[in-house]
Image 1 (spheres, rainbow, N blue to C red):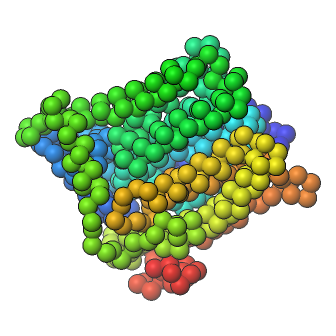
Image 2: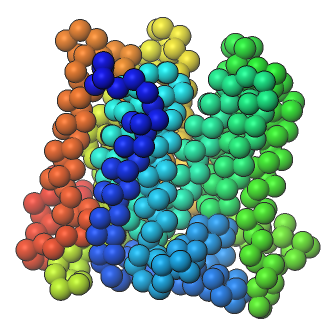
Length: 412
């Protein structure tokens, strides 16, 4: 791998094709709505008919994308989930792009994207019609574009920065939990440019922050366009801003306790995964467990520490940025006013862990450790194969079959 792979595009295309095939294989199983699909698919159906407001807890874009899938592929599991699989592939390629642009080497980009494919969280979210998959695809794409803009010249810098800002607006238009990433982008720009003025050449702080704010907010508001055409209670410009308060009140309402709730500080340890499905369906007992691949979830914590060490000891800006985006992605949940937390909120953070592992192994994988990245991918692949039956809703022997995969007493 060190000497054969030289160019990023063929590798990226091959990885994208492999990811899409994996995510789309048996995508229509099960044929019933799974977990939060019971909220978002009916909302998408209503949105497709422009009947009126529904599921106002979240903005429209994610449900609009699901609705587009239904219009293109029909009312059924393929229509519900097709674009989720595309979003999963976009996440994988976003990971590849971030690592390639940050380090300029193909090996960490390939390693990171393979770990992303093999991370159970990405696989599961790529096969269910939920908002988080779309939100994550936009955020990861935005980060890749903003980092790429740092490497640009002339007009490239502004165009790429604008594109990244628009993607952040689309992410927030899918789910509000992407909003902190707009602030993260602003802070990263200020700190990184202060450290080295040649980053984002020609894009000075005032226009950069203005573009980020105006483009992200403007794009976010534009995602409400379908609501202006509702048959009942159509949106108007006068209602648009007050409507955001309605969303806020829905987001912050106090909810009753839930079987699968968990505290944000427990998510990095993978202590409380969630059964999206575990019941007889399509003629067999089947299960879908939202769980992290231990190699990525637990190994990623070591990688974050290694990245912090590389940043502090060797002044590696790339390693430091990767570590801090993971830290910020977890810490923000201590502030977000949610009455309940669930492991799937950790989805974006689990994506940054794949990047952290690839970056740390690229920096420190020398001498006897030079093949540790390949070992990590191999072990992650072995665990993926082992857990695949309860990730992909394959037929299980019976109701007690799940016990084979329950490593910890806290796993359901």
